[in-house]
Length: 444
Ligand code: S3P
Image 1 (cartoon, rainbow, N blue to C red):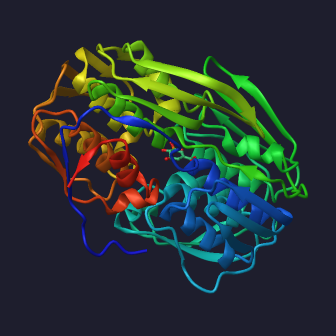
Image 2 (tube, rainbow, N blue to C red; image 1 turned 90 degrees about the vertical axis):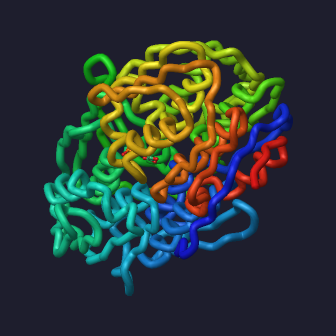
């Protein structure tokens, strides 16, 4: 997947946004559904799969590792898996494009199989730390045959012939590290345990159970969890219905809050409590977000959200909340710009190692658009004045969420906001621009 030519776009002050939309399927679940389908024996049907570049790259990797991955129609996919430990050696390099989730989870799954695979990605992914995965998978028995600078991509990994179960404490709260260890541990005999001091998204644990593995989850300290999977299960295919991605819904949600007179409904949004930190925060800020039609569907909680334009006020966002809204800080910073008063977002260290250095990218975007802010250690402090001047050109650094966040800002700022490249939006939310235009957004 190449992004040869940057695609700039400018957002202008819009009239009230109106509409009822379903944002695409959750990226975390979509990536995992393909991986679990490939590790199960038999045919897994997936509905509502996010057909964004990140997920499609995971699908290609699963096919290269021996699974059959077939698109049946819009969002409907069928994966015929090879079983735990059953991957075949891929013929070429596994290219994950922009996606750390795909790359890191597949590194975990490969680590427990006796195959050698090479992992690579785009310039953004090549900058991201991979030691956090290489360290634990080496303990399990995999060998790093080659690596880029300081453990970065490109990496060649030789999976373990006889993987050993480990007990691993994650150095940072990260669902990707946790998932990589659990996926590698699936191929090891006995119990593999991951301990996290702050609970991160639990989609891997839920899917393990859904596909028939034995998983034990215990509390760890005030906010953490200890997760144990019993290795060498025969995973049984199970249908996966992918709900709408709360991290994508976040963009139209904040747009509706800050564009006067707006009222929109976001349907089928996943409300897993480990993903809803943004909604909690926005409500504390005074946002009118009403959950209607709250329900459960094949292992996930979902709801429709009616969102109305609201007068927001600044709040203090505790560091413990970060794992449940880790991808939402760029758009929260936009909401905070339109709030009255100061919003302090604490504990954002991990933002420095996302698709871009998101703390720096957000700061530059705020500065370019006349929003007052400070960075104090790992905290971002936005001094909201109820408005943003706009008029800036935002550098997105190959980061879809930076592009979308500032395309939302421009819908309510005094002057237009430009972003230098929208092409990476296709990694997670390919329909973002047309969906927003359909609700009244002004983009040109
Ligand atoms: C994800 C985990 C998060 C998140 C990413 C998706 C996942 O990363 O930022 O967009 O699907 O497991 P970390 O686990 O590194 O926090």
